[in-house]
Length: 167
Image 1 (tube, rainbow, N blue to C red):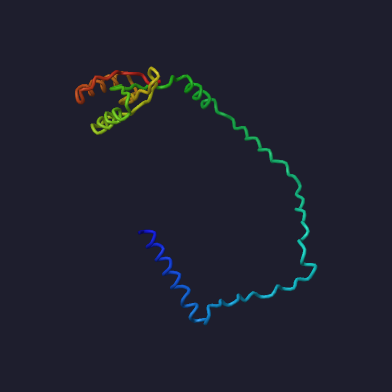
Image 2 (cartoon, rainbow, N blue to C red):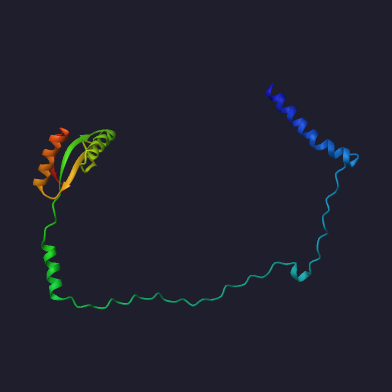
């Protein structure tokens, strides 16, 4: 049925297009297209132009950067730089409150801790060939501050965490 309807629509469309053309022209002859005659081209212009060689450019060697001027370093600045190298890097401590095999569980705990005002984050680690998602709170600069954070988490959130030093 659908094919018959499509066929009828096509026939009607063709009739709408061609019947007026046949009736207006008296016999349906289509007018010939008016194509202008080919222009006369002089023989010199009738062939392809000869290729032109690109202009020769002299190779310029790359510029060497100029050396930076030597600025004398005062002895006090040299001593301060040596003292800064002697200071050990700062330690950071965190409280790990959970380790999950599914990321969505870790995200849920992290989001709950953030809503409670804690600085929580997730760290991915490989454990036994599988990915573990560790939820950690912190960091704190000292171990004592991290232990205080651990006690606060236990009291406010009921989470027994482990204090760890970040590497």
